[in-house]
Picture (cartoon, rainbow, N blue to C red):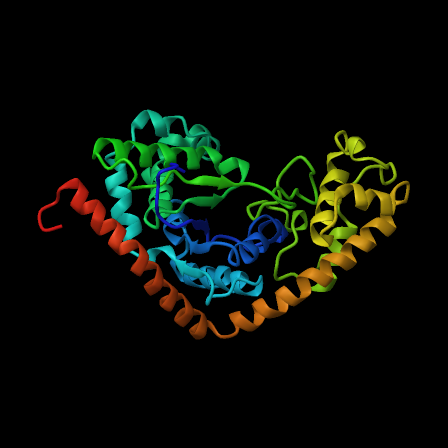
Length: 340
């Protein structure tokens, strides 16, 4: 962020309404959001515009959006403290994205590795939206003059693009400090939660194996079963964190244990060093159920009343627009549009 930017500190983050949210989403994002809302102004967006960069079933998209909203609320995000809304309800996103399309450079987008990873050899068949979505992501953040963005390692490149776009807009239009240069927030336990079936891969809602993740809507019995079947190795629980480096499956479970119990990985190992994995997994399952069962219960209660979720999202969309619309109106004026 520019040292001379004088606006308020504001956190912006988005979650796609695709697939079921899982433990990795909770530990890596939702839990942190619930903490951040007490320290900074927070805007949390369900990014349904990003979702349609790949084909979606129109009959399911609204329900998937409600699912994400319910997960935010059940995880402790308070709509009286933070704004939780769906992206498509605020037109500032798409309008600012077009202006930024005229600021960003093809070479910048060509360097984005996520498109290459997702498209592979089929890049010619991918939508323009999938290629261009980092520009929309920049618009998401800067429509609110977001100063801080909680991101994983895989999104740091896109945040750098947001900073480049903000800087070029400020320079090109002679408004040196209009947009802030948003900073990443990458810290704390659970920043990267690994698959239960492969400790070298992140837990993902797109993994074809449901056993690879703990969904926030899983029952206590399902959670315990998945942890019991989680992949380890033929050894015992290690004594030091150094030993975890060569044992990714074990390291992933230890990291989950530490994040759920709010203790260090070293403390986890102290408790279980040299033990068999059966008792270790049982202890982990007990902690996971204790933490997640109340969240699951709350989610199910929210999802049972979709009309109230829709009313909450509508109110939040109005709040979000009250922040973003004046910012985009200033952008129109700065660009020089007649009547702006």
